[in-house]
Image 1 (spheres, rainbow, N blue to C red):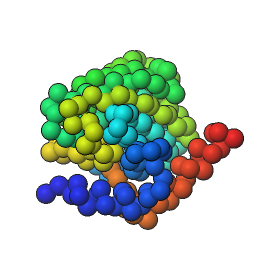
Image 2 (image 1 turned 90 degrees about the vertical axis):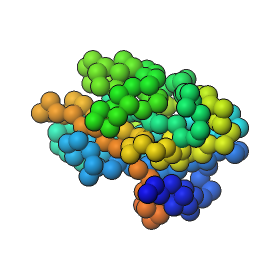
Image 3 (image 1 turned 120 degrees about the vertical axis):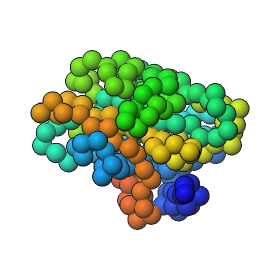
Length: 208
């Protein structure tokens, strides 16, 4: 049984007051590393959605805890709701080598609705070197198009459909040539609060 309602409450309680703008809904996300393909990559971040405009902002920080390096080279997500033709187009990325993927494969986790990746390919994309290094943060802005866009919330891009996995991040470029595909989840309340504070500190440092 899905826990969408519970996770929505958890996210709201952990991040109350951290919304990025009027009408915006923001949640923290983090790695479900135990269920990744190789248990190498790790990330934290946020999903910020404004129903009134359909603008979706995804922030990802590479905080892989390994001496083997590894770079974030792409991510995919599903769009919850009832519109089976819903889509999301990448408008702005702080890492310009990331391009719009559209509907793409995140095998073995199935195919997901939208995302961004090096060269526009989640599984490919050429050299991983332009990816997000450990300690770096990428911010990606999408325009969501859906008949029910006004009724969506941030959680609908992480745990919003009947699919087992709705958000996946790709890591490549480990020293041993390895790669990883890491599902994203919403953290527990205490962790969500800490991630939210850390995100605000990082934002203030970047603006300072």
